[in-house]
Length: 198
Ligand SMILES: [Zn+2]
Image 1 (cartoon, rainbow, N blue to C red):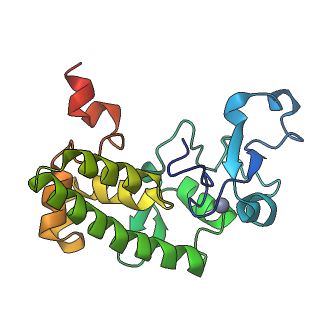
Image 2: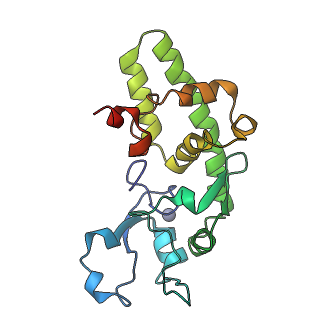
């Protein structure tokens, strides 16, 4: 639920120094102690962006924010890796971008930087593997998973399934990510060959 190390579960950029009640206590007092209603959030997302907002569809009453404890953000948002910009796939994606200000220029820059960094780290990982330094390679993969903006790496992985992948990712990165054991821990269970064989 909180990719990277204790990062904000909404922007993925800053330290999750606050706890946000996803469904505000005012609207749902009975969820005050519901574990899955408590998300790590940074000060900006908690106090400046979301605050007590909880937009709902007027006809169905369904919450229009992506719930990171139950939903895959990728189903509602598309990350354009070259620009670092999120585009909505659904009304839920649109409301999430707008409520959390995911269009902040600092976030878009940080995602572009993370995209470059992920490429370098994946290449370093592959080099270490080739030279038989498995322990260091494993350490590199773990460092990759700990960094902020884990959503960028996740979007790179999900791009592998899209027809335009070669327009977005370099050939060598496609090959490294194509090896499904390359970055343990980021595969959805169904896609993870390690869990499938258990
Ligand atoms: Zn945040």
